[in-house]
Length: 230
Image (cartoon, rainbow, N blue to C red):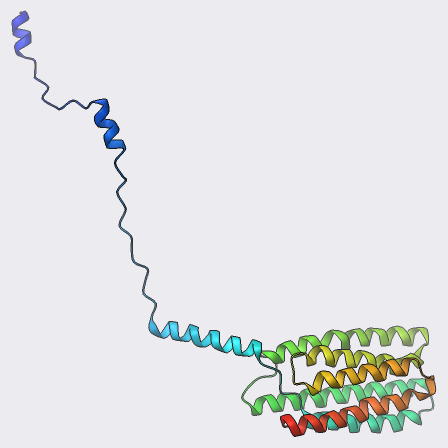
């Protein structure tokens, strides 16, 4: 019985794995997985990306040249007309409405003239440097509108001419930092006129308004018209 059971045993012929063999196997460098090549970028797409980058770079570095010199001259004429009417006003309300009406008309003229100049050059008013110019012009004008309400409410309308000139000049300076040189220079001149009006007698208010919104607009409008067209 004992020999019979031994005869039925199957001999294990598999190679035995020793500790050193396992260690050697674990120390082998890991196999690198095959890497897939990145998808090829179409030549057309790459060219379009390069052109887009060049265009955006040029827009960021360009100046806003669409300020209209003709529009400035028209704004000056509107201001001179308003100064004559306001000087004959029988009440402070009529005086205030005269100047506010002139401001609204001048703003409309300036916007339309700049838009026309932009279209003539194949661009829109709110792209590239034009957008920066607009967003830098708006905050001082909005602040000036709020200050107007406050001064009218407390009955200090004699401070309006100086404040208007000062805030308008600040608006032109901040927006003019993205435009041609005469624009920020005009803004600085308006700021000086506003500062002078604030420390001068109230009776000189209309004279400062005529000299600032009238004379400065006409003078710098002619300069911009001759040097930068439109």
